[in-house]
Amino acid sequence: DVYKRQIYDHVGSFGASKQFFRKMQDAGIEAYPFFKVTFPEFATRVNWRNHRKITVIDNQIGYIGGMNIADRYIDGINGGVWRDTHIRIKGASVLGLLHSFHTDWAFMDLPHFDDGEDIAIFQNGKSTGAGVQILSSGPIGQWHNIALMFNKAIANAKKCIYIETPYFLPTEALLRALQSAALAKIDVRILIPRRPDSAMLKLASGSYIADCLRAGIKVYFYEAGMLHAKSIVIDDEFSTTGSTNFDFRSMEYNFECNAFIYSKEINSRMKEIFFDDIRQSTCVTISSWRKRPFVQKLKESCVRLMSPVL
Image (cartoon, rainbow, N blue to C red; front, side):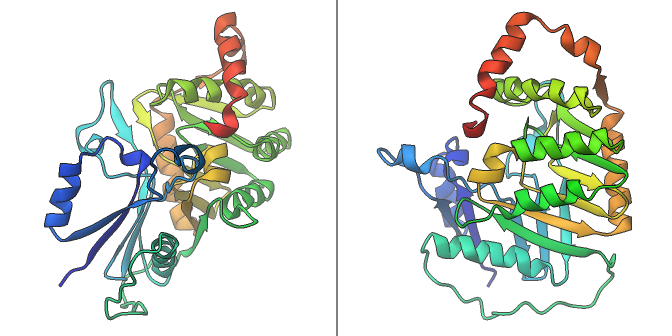
């Protein structure tokens, strides 16, 4: 038998019908909502969302990145593509993804399961030789592991920092780290969508652009559709992708998971992807950004106050 188990975020799946989940159940899929939100508990639970996007197959193969399970990945969206990044992993690093899934399963106090394989046995095969570190983070515990890793990686940059994110609402520490890098003549570039899927988040992201441009950070708007990829490439060997957006919510409130990759080959491929996206983007100049209407600037400033909870 093939065991099929799924944990889905309850708030993120509000649009899915009961019939949809019944079909999954009829197909033999065990699907459970993470931290089911109901009234009156809504106010206390809505912030703790499971934003992780991981898949483990036969304890041998793992997938991680920014992709959800949704029709838009096949059909696209009005006005363009839905652009995302997801990677396939084999080898011992799959244990990190497996551990993240089991931790969420236990956190929800779901029935214990045993597939007959407590330890994954990895088969020999072609390998890139990449070192892959899986980090999970969430509101439980003292430290926000992924945010700390982002800060450390940015602080250690020597030549370049390339970021793709759908929402740019950095914490004060991350913003200062990026500004410091740019002022030290490191090539810092940030790519965000021209038309994100949230008007509020667009306003909030816009409020940080001037802070970046003044420090010499290059900012680009992706024009081909919705950029949902979440990746960072630094220098010649380090790269990361996963579920973590460059915003307060991902850093402090959401349950997230990222792969941190130490490989020149993967770094080079991630740079190719980044510059492919740049070719479909428009560079923001500080002179043009200053010419936005006063009302636009006012809206951005007001929404920025809510950045920690957006």
